[in-house]
Image (cartoon, rainbow, N blue to C red):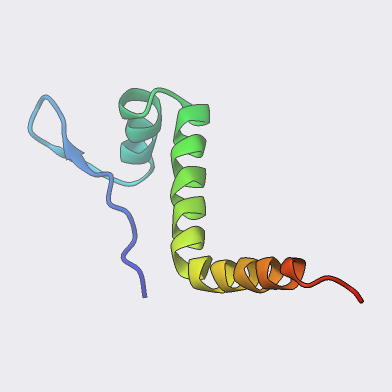
Length: 73
């Protein structure tokens, strides 16, 4: 099981901020807004998808390329 992301950080007073407040700080202060956060998450998902499925995708492309070399007689 994957570890949950931990956005906790110490504030100016040295107290640990965690939970929703830490997540809000991460999205709005560190990432620069919701759109940039969503883009980063989407990029991570797409990257992991390609890593996990590249062998299957490449094999399918190779089969398609081999088939395209044959000519109907």
